[in-house]
Length: 422
Image (cartoon, rainbow, N blue to C red; front, side, top):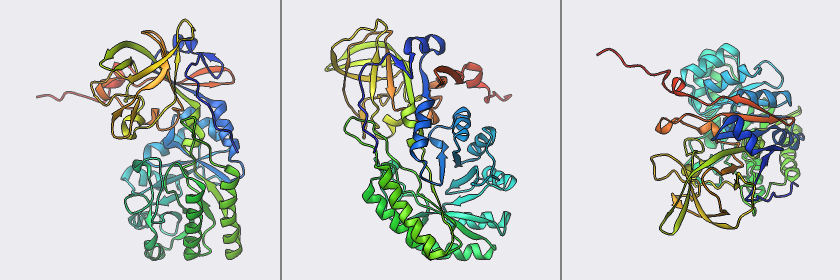
C-alpha cells in the first residue's frame, strides 16, 4: 500500500527544476506537470488488464501522447475529446480499443465521429441505444449502469444514486436489452462508477451490483470496467486506497463471471484523477499583500479562471511558498485570493464559499505561491472569465521542462468573435 504523503509549506523546485528557472522561462501563472509521477501511477495499476485514462481530468495532447506510449488507452466524453485522442495517435481499431466514447447523450458531432471512426460506445442513457442502432445497426456496445447508490467527496462529484444524471438506472436494464435486440446489437461490456473518493466498503457494494447486472445481461459480456474514482491525498491525514485489495475485490468478481459465462472477461479500470492529480502544480506570483480586518490576504496573478475546484466545491489543495530570496520565515494565517472581479475568487475556502485561512510562511510581493496536486480537473476546467488569458502548460520530462501549451494572447481571445455590420 502506498504511504500517505506529507505536504511541506515551502518549495524551491519541481521535479528537480528550480521554480525561479521555470518562472523566468515561462512566466506566471503557469501549470507544470511532472511526467515521472504520471508514469509511476500507471505502473501502480498494472494488475488490471486495461488502464483506460479518463482524459477529462487533463486532456493536453502531449499528456495523452505520453500515456499512450505507456500502453494506456483513453475514454472520450465529447467530440472534442475524440479529436484530441486521434491527434495524440489513438485509434479505435486497436485491441483493446484505443478510444471508447462514454457519455449520457450523443450530440450530433460526437455521434458523427463515432460512426466515422467506428468508435466503441459506452451508453449512459437508454435513448442512446436507439440513436446508435439507427446509425450502426448490429454493432456491439457497453452500458454504464447506475446501481442506485453513489459516493463522492462532494455531492457535486457523486455519480450514482437517484440524484445523479449518470448511467442507466439498474431497473431499466431489461428494457435496454430489448432496445438492443430491435437493432441486432449486443451488450458486450458493463461499466459502473459511483463517484470519486471510493473506499473499499463502497467498492464491495459496487462489485456486488456489477455481478448481479452482468448475470442479468448474460454471457455476451466480455468486459467489465471498474470505472474511476481512485482517491489521491490532498491533505496530510488522507490516505491512498489499498490497490492490492481494490484489485482483489474486482478480480474475484471477474473470476466468478468467467466461471458463470465460460469465457474470459477482461477487467478495465478508468482512472482520471489518480493518474495525473499529483503531477500538477500551478505556479503563481504574489502581486499584492493586504490586511482586511482580521484576514491577511496574499493576492495572486492566478484566479479561479485558472483553478476552479475551490470555488466549485470547496476543494482543498496543498499550498507552498517559494520566496525569491530562498529564506525560511515563520508561518502566519493567510487567505489566498486571485485577481478576478468576483468575491468567490478565493483559493482557501471551504464548501459553501466560506473563507478559510491557511498557515503559510510569511511572503511578499514578487514571491511565488504553488498550488499543488493540481493536475486533475484544473487546467481542463480553465476559462477566459474576466477576459483573462489562459496560462501555459509545461511538462518536465527526464529533467527537461517542455512547453506543451503556450500562453494565450489577445489574438487568441478575440479570434472567434466578430462585429456584424449594423
